[in-house]
Length: 586
Image (cartoon, rainbow, N blue to C red; front, side):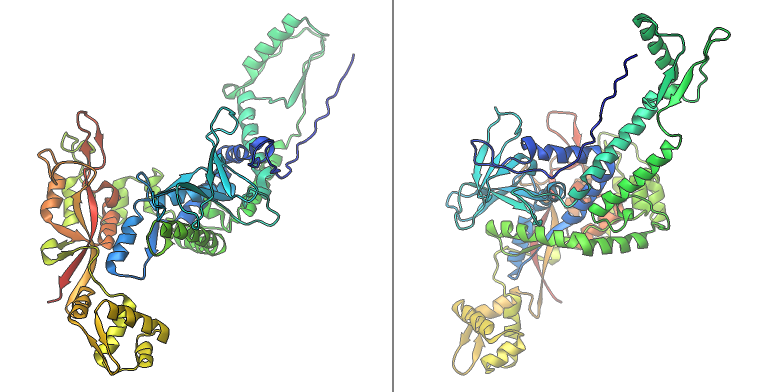
């Protein structure tokens, strides 16, 4: 009998090579220009790797994007409102989360800039999937294609984003630094690529073990010589039907044979403790994936570790360590790039991220996981359990409007007590106010005395005083400084001795929809909010969200019916309008 053996060569994973495409300017992104597809396949195949990448992106993007502005209240409000629109479809927080996902998957991200016609500012920023971008050697040009494997697809060419050469459409292409890097970046976790692939193979192994029973782990020896091909096929079919698959687990197989014949022999190809070996391998793989991702505590990613209780305090401490070691540097890096983008739109200020801490296994998390009901969560938080309401045409989502109204009544201030201000009203900056305070106390103070009292350098104080004099807010002579009538009004506008300035939110009509503030068909809850005529602070709306158990910013008044259909959507035609208000102190 002729016996043949086949040699099996185990694959190795060399780093991808980036070389200039033949006849093109761009560089290929790995072998066959297909390395991004390899990365995405790992992300979509390994549940552990997927969970870590997704959670890290969530930590980096944070809960909210905010802006620091040294300017008037009107300028601050304008900058904050500008964060709501990066483009007609997305906010700055939306595009930042997408960039964070690309940063964790690929080690870089890309945005498309649409300049206005004069080239004085960027109108819109759009996120571009990093895997669909290619660049030349110095990244001065960027090419985009929906499918790089399809040669029929267009390759759109764009110049790199350049503030010195504004205009048209440009692409900001960013890659994080890595020692020995090539044209394209490698993600932080790349050293664990092999372990991530093993993780997917372990899953496949167990799946096949369950589905196929023997999984080529055994040899069946039959001592009756070699049968015909038809008999072989019939035996194969019947044997698989009776021995493989989950439904045959722990079953009994009966073998019929003549007296004196050699019985069937089942020879194991795998050692008997192969399951233990796989368990050990699985732990090794998991540990190495965590190491590559620089995970300080697996608890943050839903993995229990012996000796860790997993309580809220322990989870918070673990997050603080991971935040300092990994998340904060990444977040700072991204905020710096986004600030440059934000300033290119004509807005002043520095963007920063409000962190999103892990919730821990509290009532809210248990509710999300389906372990606790809404009523159980409210009861655990000391809140009154809601009574069920019948679904109707007035309330197709079954929401308890009366209970919600009771919460809204507890918050807000009457709009009648406030004066709405234009966003461009004259207001002094904080340094100007500090200088004015010193001037009021000592109109004859020297420049050095003014600077010291206002906590400024003499150069800063001199420049501010010149600007204020040019705006006729002060009269600066050789002997003294006088505050003009216009300056006195600006002091009042700035929240002086007898006034206060607030940024508050009012329930108003979405400017993108037509019609009056209320319609005949408006739901009772919307009418209630309009008739309340209240103003709410950001903190109050956040507090109502926590108490009600849903996001008040997103739901607003609730639901509406799409015109001409019977389709209901869980957002109404109203929004929270942020405006500037002034109130006189009584």
